[in-house]
Image 1 (cartoon, helix red, strand yellow):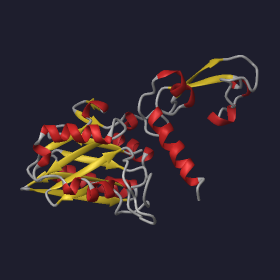
Image 2 (image 1 turned 45 degrees about the vertical axis):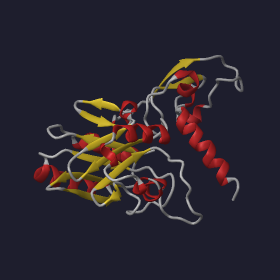
Image 3 (image 1 turned 90 degrees about the horizontal axis):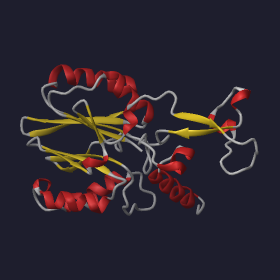
Image 4 (image 1 turned 60 degrees about the vertical axis):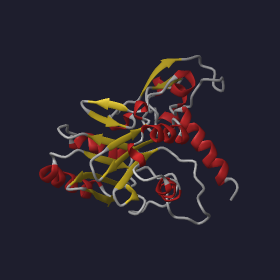
Length: 258
């Protein structure tokens, strides 16, 4: 479900962290920064190798500037360079997004929900709206808690929409915790040996290979899809946060119609 990153001037994001983000969201990446009265955009990276090279060059030449980075997990639209972030709202205002937006997508469109939202909604906002706190709050309410955005304009203004739903770590903002590598994302506890009883999980589902682990119930700390910290028994048991559960239910229901 993507991850968006804001690296303020003076902070750093190491390559290992960026590679973690790529491994979790390998459908394309891009980044942007503001200097000289314009927004500079680099996007369309469809492999970790090309992104890594571009980021190393950026940090060598422009490290004094802050940057906004995005890694895509495709939900709507093709896995194309055009659908990678950032997306243009105006020539002097760009954005990245994490989540799934409730926007009408024409049948047959190859564009992502984010691209349509920029064109159909954000592009029609009043001039300089990104400076108006009331409109930022209204946008946060409209997109809901399942979505986060980072806006960057040519003057260097950064607005994080739903900032409180992300994570600040070592001076860098991440839209979720998917930047952390977690080789083992679950812990297990013994449960009753009654196959079919609610709560007994099939060992194949979690890739358990040792026979002595069969009959163990698996509990997750992070969502397997978006990386956010899980809350409550049901989320930790299934390994999926509520927002992702709602998304996949809607996705599968839509697929059954065709």
